Image (cartoon, rainbow, N blue to C red):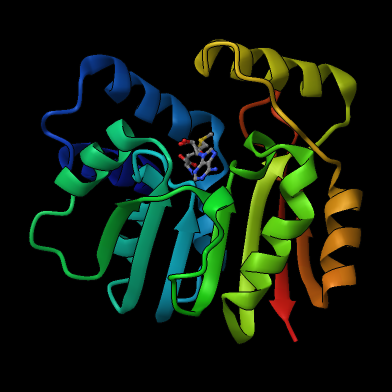
Length: 215
Ligand SMILES: C[S@@+](CC[C@H](N)C(=O)[O-])C[C@H]1O[C@@H](n2cnc3c(N)ncnc32)[C@H](O)[C@@H]1O
């Protein structure tokens, strides 16, 4: 069995009570999402906060492949977090909680790594600068921010993702920015850009990954 297939099976086995529709969603997620590229850049120790972790599929993959990393995931969606919490069992390097990014991250400590995986285009643009500032404040010095998001070009890929999100999220709008805009906002806040990649996964999804260091 290929390595990625093994990871997907392992992740699904953590969710024995996952409804069939969500199991299909999990498999599709790993099919269209550049999981290999993300996992490759995750440091293998320290602490990591995954904001907008959803069901915790990717968060779990990160924690399983990096047993010395302490992983925390939060999401605004109570149903998803309940399933994520049920997946933890007796593993002690991962925790999930319900929280809203828009309520600020005040009560949380600082982390070595913060990931925003397909989160930011679900947050209204008027909050983007504040979110970046909050993340900056919650990173340790030399800590890493990893953003995986959806680009605005080429237009046909942008619209493909737009309709995907409209259907999957039952009419919810998305608020994409181009990778140029994110990089400019990150630099203004004091981040140094370390890596920018455009993974070719899922054919019609304009993925980009930015890694930025808090100086
Ligand atoms: C496309 S899903 C990505 C989930 C996960 N990161 C993954 O890659 O599988 C976006 C997630 O962001 C969450 N989200 C949206 N707005 C949020 C907010 N204000 N605070 C926390 N999570 C939020 C949604 O509930 C959803 O689970």
